[in-house]
Picture: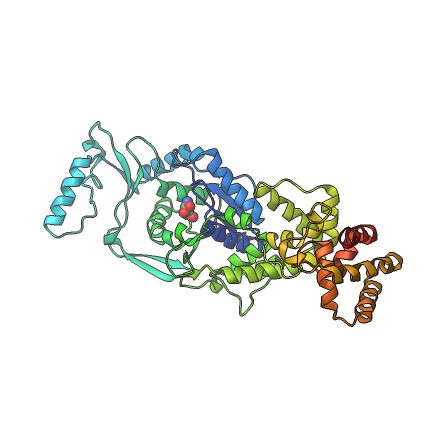
Length: 465
Ligand code: GLU
């Protein structure tokens, strides 16, 4: 078989819908797993909506998700001449015709059809009119669709889907002002871009039937179609703003990890046995259209959290720091200093533990980011009283002389706890207050190791003075 070529063809609407992201992901996985190409086409023929900003939002979404495409993004609008050329070719080969019907004539046809309880699908009297009868008047170019029999789309997900040709009209390919229609443009672009597989939302399934007529009219091979069910909200209803986040960038702003998002979106409507957590390499190897389900999938934030959490745990620390920096920029936070970043890097192994979102990491990192002297919050301050301060005071000189290693630090703290006949928790609580001023922190030993001896002792002295 020739090389696989897939594409994502978003219409710029101002943001990137989560469904578009998933469609892009499926196409990316399909192509990348087969040594194929994955292309990007911006369907920007609606000139009012198609602003550069709207296109940028899509490109940013793709970039965040790490879905790289081959070559440059193709602008559909820039190809209108080619679309027109194909319409003219169809006219020349007799698979399309000039229709001179006016709006009034079409409306009259429909009224009569309704009155006679016939199909209101327009049947142009110009379909078979010889050129000698053509008036010198505006016309549209209509495709000569088959009238008898059926159109069958062999869909990789939906199976064979059939339409009676009597229910499909002669669609317009060129409007009377000479502009091509979207239905024509999609086919011409997919053909010219060499697209072999069209994987897209099943809201385009009916379009496939009519688009197939253009392929036949031009004697072009049909692509393989896979129409995927849409994403629904947690309540099973069609996803809408009411459900919360529908745009990809909102997920970035919520602090999800792109790798986790890819994994989660891949599982949204596709499965490979019982595998829930997987890497990109596995997804590329496993992804196929036969694993795509037939019913709509539901957004499930719990599952998203869970999968992202596993990706946090598995991620490389330096890569996490880099993505965290991008996340902070995306939510408009100033970057951390180099020194703070260095500490984040050293602490990442414990910060990422149980994190689901970047916010969890940052919350846990107050011992790194807080200004000194540390001001304990209300909850944490409760753990500092005369008794616990006394214990910290006793601990300080011992730490001064200890080798700065986990085992030694643990032994020193355990020794002091034992001497006072208290549990380790009783000493950890004031230590947390001193080192972080918070109760939810990494372990006290992790904090001590990251802060180092001088900073640890300085913080202990500040509270036990
Ligand atoms: N532009 C269409 C959309 O954003 C997709 C068209 C297609 O994939 O064929 O829904």
